[in-house]
Image (cartoon, rainbow, N blue to C red; front, side, top):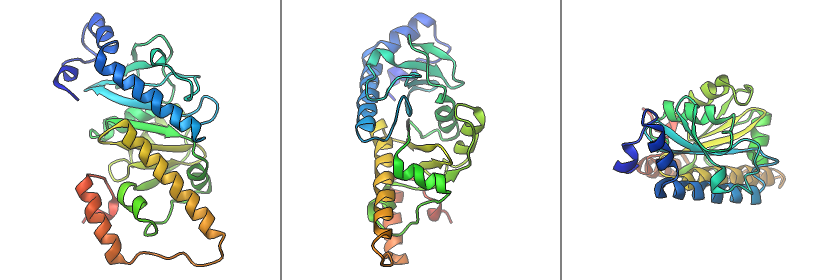
Length: 243
């Protein structure tokens, strides 16, 4: 967040918020959201008008996707600006009802600058089965993702946001039972999307490997420890690093 962005808040005059919303910094963020949304749609990580994305653009202002718009066909002018309570501050379209979940993540985890929610089939299947993917199998997953499972709550409600937010201090990717997946990043929207992509590839690989009729190889504790040391340097949370 630049110093210029930090000067703007939800308490700023409405004319200043509108100017900020249409300015070059936020315009770049709008383009990023549209780009990532299109990639999610192309990879079938979202269906219908499902999924949503958000970027924190000031201390208490968040840019987010609109409701009832396919992520594959969003335009920058479709996007919305909300405060941390979900009140819409700018944008012609109505903000996504699920922004409350994204905001709860950002309030609970101040490092979260971007969040991505989708319905990738393999990750969503693990959540539907109530299974957190096992660790110690593939190095990329060990390095970049830490996954937990949140119980089902009605989408768009504060209850769902609270259940997910309770897990984000120690995990950056949350399976939501009977719903989908949400990931957060401390660096960028693209990085949050990468978490989703890595999780989905991992879940798909595990499903394929399980059909081969052979026990899956596992890393040794020492090998996992080496990867966790790298993960810590990346600033990525993982409960195995505590204590």
